Length: 203
Image 1 (cartoon, rainbow, N blue to C red):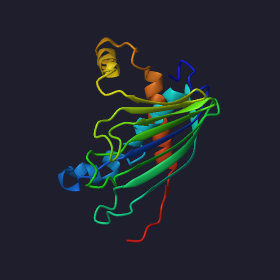
Image 2: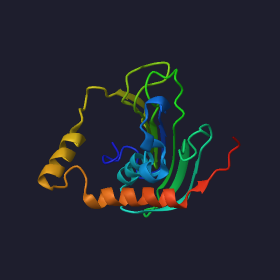
Image 3: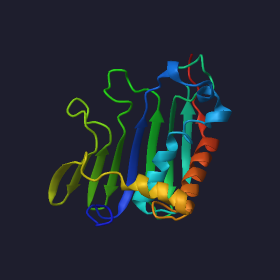
């Protein structure tokens, strides 16, 4: 839809990547900063890659980032919350937050969402469920000058990316994505993590 110009030029992306902690079943390394790297270069990596892809950016600047441990004083090296703001080379902006606070009452491990603002419309992706309405995921909402649309995409498009990525690894091709793209996403994750302000929290 973006490539077809349905929402015009993408100017802003907002991403939400909440996860369930499942603390009791995590391995020891999960709570050691040197080994898991921090929340922004862990689950934040997916967010930044999507921003580059949806906006057509090859590079971006990390404007601000922060991390904190709000509710896990017994594992002080764990960051249970993080967010960041980026500015792409083409002027598109990005705000995302990731956390380990998915409530036990949610029917899946996280209510991941992406909201994309264009000059002519918007797209919202509800990845894993539509809270209190549908336990299926892959809901896409499109709003343009022509009206509103809802697309239920479970089982409709498959997972072509994963097959192409596996073949890229085997054949040393770059059909799913380029190595330059992957490395840039990871570089921005590391910069976000390195620059992150640590939120002072009361324990």
